[in-house]
Structure formats: C-alpha cells, structure tokens
Image 1: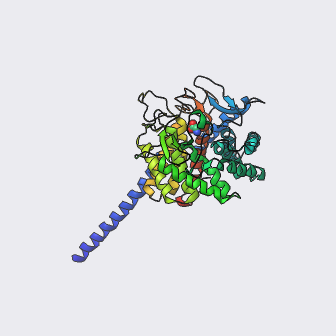
Image 2: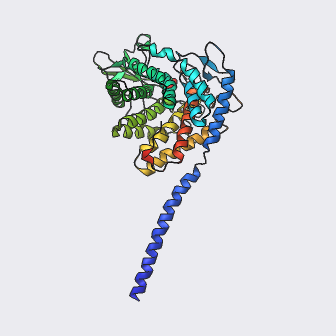
Image 3: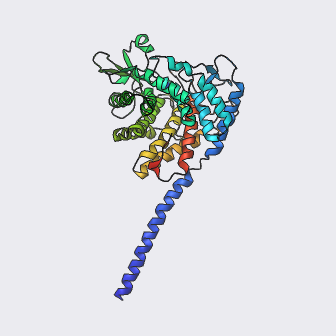
Length: 417
Ligand code: GLY
C-alpha cells in the first residue's frame, strides 16, 4: 500500500516536471510566434526603393540624398561635406550585404569615393565618424579594399584632434564655439563617432584613439545624464578647468526634455562601447538609458520627436529614433546575460521593426525613401515629419541585424557588424 502510494507520488512529480518543462518551452515558442516580422521581403522593399532613387539621382553636382520634405516627392541632395553624406553610400553597402547583388557594390563604391576629400580635413567636426565609418567603414568591412582603410585611419586621426584632455571629451561642434559661445561643447550624438576611433585603434591606428574613445564615453556617462538617465543634448564645458558648465538642448523641446533621437544615440552608443571594450559599466548603462526610453514609448513604439513635447499626441513622430533604437536593442539583446531581459530587448526591437514595416511608416508609393515620419530639427522648423536618409540607413541595418540573429541560438557568440 505504502509502495503504491510512493509510486503514484513519483509519477505525479514526474508529470509535474514534464508539464513545467513543456510550459517553459511553449512560452519560448509563443514569444517566437509573436514575432511575425518577415525580414527578406522588407530588404527587397528597400532595394526596390533604392533602385528608384538611383535612377533619379543627378549625374553631377550635389547627388547624395538627404531628405524628402513632407508633401514633396523628390530627394533634397547634398554633397560630401554634409553630416549626412555617409548614409547613402552606407545604405548601398548594406544592400550589397543583404542581397549579394554586384550592382549595389558598384554603386556603393562610386558614392563612397565621393567622400574621399574628407580624409584631408583636419579637425572638421565630430560628424566625421558618421560620414566616414558608414561609407568607407562598411565598404572596408565588405571588400577589404586597402584604399578604404587608409581613409578611415586618416579620418580617425583627424577626429582625435578635437579631443580635449582637460575635459575628457571630443569637441563636437567647432563651429558652435563662437556662434553660440559654447567654449567646449559635446553632444550626445558624438557617442556614435567613437566607433571610428575604436576601429582604427584595432586596425593599425594608435592605441591613443582607443583611450580617447573610452575617456569620452566615461565623461559623457557622468555628465550628460539626469538622475533618471535621460540625456541632455548638449553639455557645455569650461575649456580651462574642464568642468561642466551646463546641460542644454539644441534640437530638443527644452533643456530638460528627452529628445527622442538623442536618447537613441545614447542607447546605440553605450551598447557599441560595451562591444568594443567589454566594460560592464557601459553594458549596465546602455540598459538604463534604454529602459527609460522604452518605459515612456507610445503604444506603437515609435516615439514622438521629443518625449516631453506638451502637444503630444498631436506632435510629430520620429521614425529615425525608432530605427536607431531597434538596431541598438538587437545588439544589446546579444550582450545581456539575463535571458528574460535579453528576450525583452529583442522582442521590443522586433515589434518596432514590425510597425516601421507597416503601411503607416513605409513610404511605398509616396516617395522613393524607405520610411516616412522622421523629424530632423524641430526647433529650426526643418525636416519635420519627413523622410530622412539616416532613418533608412538604421532601418536597413536593423533588418540585417535581425536576419543575422534569426539562426543564432547561442546569443553571446553573436557579432553584429
Ligand atoms: N546628429 C544630428 C542629429 O541627430 O540630428
């Protein structure tokens, strides 16, 4: 009798264990099933739109697409000196990576070469990172062309000349020193351009470049954020004492508001700094700046241009911030050790991509860009609710990252670039 009772208990325990195991598995499957994002058709969509842009680009003069204003159908073109010049060549490299079609490689090389004079500039602007790394950086990653490498290394040395050791950051906008009386200014966007320095230091450049990038990230982590981990856009420093004078905005709603794209640059930047350094402080910080952003998103996960604009829900959205964040969260999800948290970031990113890939956000027949509804510089009244080239760049980057993640089970062995 006692024996039978023990056997029954044993069976029940075994059944319970099996049940719990199946339940855990099915939660995992459910999470997977929820993500019905189809990446290849969206990459093909980007290729179709880019082909239309290629066909419309002027043969000479300014020919790098920057934005299509709301209500217009044609790109506004800029030349290599514009901060957005690297995004179009970068898109072409990503299309080559995503489709393996040689025609994208040919086009990517043509437009990348247009940016070559940048390597001759000294102390230009922090944006050199965006311009050179998205074009030549992606080009070198995919072709190993030594000519590209030379441009990247020279540009990294040039960017490093803007570093002020007293402050511990790069001077982001030399032109604003006089214009705005901001003696040493650093903007949150500058975090992205540290990638150029990290790469150069590991590929033949000086170790000094690595140290500058780390110091810039550490100083920014300490001075650029409010206690709730929302970012200032600009921090102004005293060049003599190196001390912070004030945190302000230039492109946001107010000095103390959370400008959406600025917060996205922070999420992306600190995630990348963790990838390059392995410093756990950066990984922890990337999660903190991501969490405050995610906690305050509207239901469709695409932020208003500034989280504190009092006209919300009538304020314009910024799809570009969503694209940057989606790409960053996909990478962040590969580093976070806590599996539940890692899945949370990945699924948020996928849900963002799902919304961005819907008819509400894709441009489709409206114009030749990939996406609508980005906001560039709201206070200046420019690029409001527009198509902007960097939204397209990070959208495609995020799709490619998602594609690479698709088959990867062992998360922590994944390399995003
Ligand atoms: N880096 C300039 C911007 O995000 O608008």
